[in-house]
Length: 215
Image 1: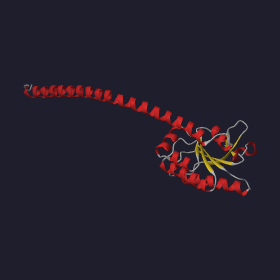
Image 2: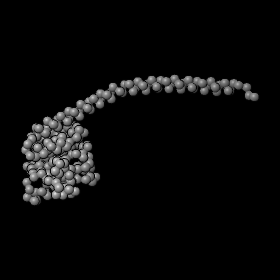
Image 3: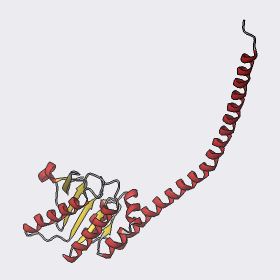
Image 4: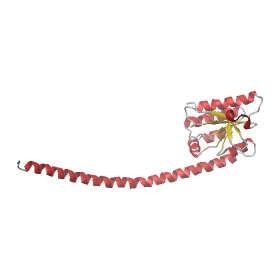
């Protein structure tokens, strides 16, 4: 219910780390706030994530900085439910009203698939947001070196890859089911035959013992 959330900055090697732990070693992007949550995005924590992102923007703006982008680093987010998808949509819409854009970065396959099924990706793009498969693309968007269309193309490649893998898995499962059922049916027949034979043997033994003379 209380996942770790952090504002992150960039180290010299290009990685992003919590500014609380690395202090002056990290660089904040001039026109963007980058936040990270170390948990699945779901109905329990979605609102907290959104509120945290908004507060992070306000802190920078109070210092006189102009923020154009809010980047959600999804490196530690392995899954997202419907509430999580809706929250991202709402955040994109709220930021659009303020003249800002949402960038959902480092999106993994399961998250991309969930967002596609909920049509959250379409709603985020409708409100000027972007979904990126890595942080490199997110940085290019922030710097004006890439477009939403560029990000969407890479995101689509990821979604198509996940869909293909899911289709292969489902096809394999569907092929296995008849074989498993046939095997169960075969073993069930043997078991029925064995049980019937055993019962006949036991019954015969009982009749024999009853008909034998007492010594």
